[in-house]
Length: 421
Ligand SMILES: C[S@@+](CC[C@H](N)C(=O)[O-])C[C@H]1O[C@@H](n2cnc3c(N)ncnc32)[C@H](O)[C@@H]1O
Image (cartoon, rainbow, N blue to C red):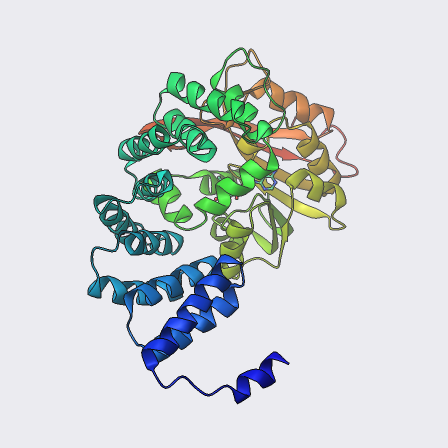
């Protein structure tokens, strides 16, 4: 038996030799994917020979692969203090800090790695990720162009550069990048969705791929409230709540917040309702909403699927800044009509488009809807339109995005003709 054999083996009296043996075995374990064993071996090696930089760097790399970036930082900092020219050590530190969302020090570490000769395209790519997070998109684009100059088959870099070019208002370059990504086998659905936003000729998809929405909002969840409310002047929750006070008795028993996100609607709705539930696709956003402690029940689901299957009935349903990510609204309005109690109210915000079409997909990859479409859907689902009003939604590239706000009521038994239409 292996264990018994080890017990009888005399301990190597030479600490350097012990450290070397553990180190070599650690490298072998790491390379064969036995990461927990590799970590233990590197730790044993460090016990015999504390502070050896190459062992510390390998220990950190193992912890990064184990998904524990926080525990990689300290060994890397110690190794780099002793051996500041270790380019790969700086690269690992950049990766760890990037994963920890410490973007400014991550950028510094990646710059050090590149200055010391790291050649991997992925180092430039990661530098771009840090720069995007630091809101330096032009430099991020340059970093991704560098990554692609080193490896023009780097699919993720083409996809991200395409999205960034779209954000930077450079549709021609965005198209070129996304088409290249598609040719290299990038996720078809996702790329076609982006191309549809860029090409006027492309068929407008009825909905975005759910993975797109999920990824987008999982990545936005940190700092979402601050960015939206303070930087972009987002006001939909308040406009919707003010309308409820103006147009309805504004006393509700049980409300549902569709696409509740981080819960920005909760403070505006809390004074109007006894109970508030929420539903959202993004686990990251829901985690923030849960931490608020204002929702009775939160579900992770697509809004239309949730409306179809929820056993609850609500006298208020709200969707603030959500339908811009839903697209065609037939399913959502039918679900709302089914889920509202008689006499119940729903309200939502949209981005508005001209009246010649039902909805369009904008270059921003958000949908915009026409008032005519909203009126038609209300009527088709037996909902009385209480009000349909234009009002700004938020700013985008410093311009106010024009919003369209709707409040509707499901007739109660005996409403007859007295309900405003
Ligand atoms: C711009 S945020 C708005 C969040 C919140 N309503 C507010 O006013 O701050 C849009 C939210 O809708 C969610 N969302 C988009 N499409 C969805 C869908 N089909 N089903 C469920 N949630 C969706 C996103 O995950 C995101 O949290």
